[in-house]
Image (cartoon, rainbow, N blue to C red; front, side, top):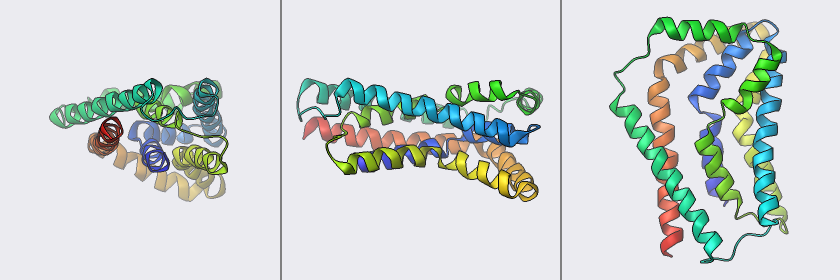
Length: 217
């Protein structure tokens, strides 16, 4: 379970659409407070998904080769195939650029959002394919073991680490953060498609391989 959660958590942390949107939120007036609202709502939704899974399983992983275990592996396989397909689609259409004018209007709107809107964007902008993959992996958590609690907490922190790092940077070094996060925003806007392809293919192929191994072993 741990290797799966580490890779999925990293994928969530560097997901380009979420990172770019969060940088725009931080660029707004009183951006650090709006960034905090974004993170809190993001984390609340993220944890709620995991809690729902753990309540459904009772904190006990299904026995190997049982119908629930097989179904979980099949779900992860389907998510992996979907991520690979999405990555391939983005790569195949890499030359279809989004109009800069529309992108600029979107950025301008995000820079003027309210705190409540920022909080609403947190769950909305989560990469739900990766979140679903993480939820399917958490089905195997055994809450009778301390290591499972450590893995789950670490997964939540890792998945939110990029947002937390940017928020803390903006709080403690606002002038430097404004310049460097602006460069990060420009980089992501320029290389967004390549980053999406890389994250989707790496995590998708990993999930496909792991799921096939679990289904056939």
